[in-house]
Image (cartoon, rainbow, N blue to C red):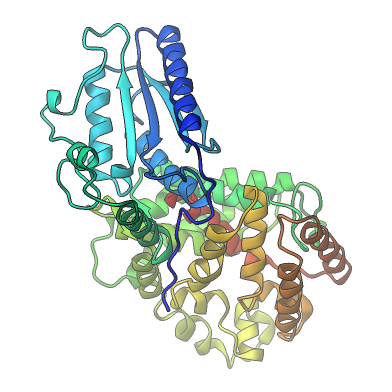
Length: 473
């Protein structure tokens, strides 16, 4: 049965008095900002959530997804100040000050509300203290009035006449949430600069998330005594050009055979590995992630051509087509190599255990990203650190981690990892003291056995990268 999420079921109801108090707070904050920036334009942003429940973890995800798209629409303008509060009981709210005319800002805000996926749920008030108009209506700028979520008619008329009950309105909002986050992961199309930042975030988010069993983080070097957290920072900084190159390669690719797109970006990957080695003084921090992230970014770039939003499932199909012959050409063809010492780690594991490793995962479209990483990130509660830890463990329990198998010298370690993950879940995950303590215990165990879940870490990078693009984090 297809999963369906009710974004209102776990939220806390607010009273009319609380709504009125919040309205006064918003007005006071707007006046403050107008007085502080009289020559600029103030934008106040909130969600239109009908009923008593105005906030929940899912509502915050909706807000974050729309908020980052709205901000991206002002990338070419100077934004002087941003205020963001997603935790307000009466619903997430934000303000930003932009150096532009009232008309220009209002038009962009209306365009966002009409064209972006969640735009119809947003209310963006635009004010300019020293402009003669102060505020402008949609109709004053030649736009039609806002339309109703349910029937598409004039929204104000529907609200005034109470034409739709609360259940109908909630059903539409739930449907939008499920289409965007649950049925698939929808990804707005961002600029190259924004994509590079999202990729950098993914790499750095994995590095700083802690405590991670056997992996490097700010409190432990895990089972990697040749690295520190700073090694990962240096490595990430060295890969900035690569992130942009692979995304652009996808956008520019005009061929029909997507295997050729992989061939196009592979020289970029080799140069990225060289840049990593130089930045880390010879340490391999991200070789696997360079491979998978580059392919994912190229596929996202290819899927995004002439579009404003793409589905992750479509990106994964492109990934699969890019790597369609990887197992046959790079694993099976070398399975009978006379010199086993000349095989790579992935080729050796295929030779010994018939495991296809990361090449097989690419050929299948990097499925663990959506099946374990993003699903857990969406469902998990707590801080971003806790949610990423939960995602890491879900991934670790769902894949055959080639790094872990290499270090354990047996694929039997996979079953042991599943047991570790089951225990972690029973303890309540990373948002509980018991779950967090268990991860620290696992770190000590992994250090003593020289084990590392490096493959899961690479998938966590992709999870944080895509989560940043679609607003989950």
